[in-house]
Length: 364
Image (tube, rainbow, N blue to C red; front, side, top):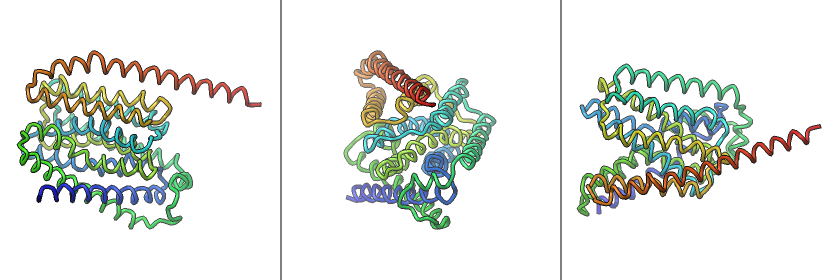
């Protein structure tokens, strides 16, 4: 009974925290002259990445640094497949062109960079420091570009119903309060879920591969779903992309600095990091095809996440169906999906070209 109450209480804290965070961040976008996309890429993304940072630093200080990279990889995969998938199922998400031109390529580059740095089995302290500096440079560039390009009137137009002269300190308090509730809610929900799993006799391995892996992504999930439901789709997408960049550069970098080096297992280099990079690259054709994430694409992401978790459970428990399941995914399902997305991308590109030609011919 206490575990069930904790589960309900944690969920309530998550929903309430996400509501406060979205409300405060949207108002801050107006008062600071920033678009919701930029707020999602910075304030919201870095804030909802707090659980991953806490886990990474504590694992480094606790002489268990291997936990850090597993947390980041699992969280980033969940952010794209689970968080974006469910958010798009709630409401189709519009993707800003600048996200495709700048931020998604940064996420792709960060994924490849981490994979390369981990190639020798360890992300060193100096390499971790370089990742943190890269995160600082990216954030400064995003804010500078946003202040130059985004006018306050445009931000206000995208956020109907907000007061004309928001009180910035009150909105900042909403953001901070929302972050606190998100972290507390995630902790309560994970703790209660683990207690329920143990009570039902589920193994610790299954709990770790499911509840704990998703637990640190719960703030992103709650925030993005609420943002999508409230019509702030760009903030939802920006939250996921920005959070993934934050995880790769700040969480892994800071963990490597604190731990004096972050060891990366052979299994992570062979399977988890390639899957992480592939998931990051999967965003580009989906985002490019029509500059939106449709409901069916969100459903596809969600199904793939269930398949990914299913494979981890089968493989982790040594089930004999694991090799067959993995072979089917790698040899049939994933290539078929890649071909489908490629066709959709080419069609979207052709429609854009025809639109540009028509506009050119209509000009006097």
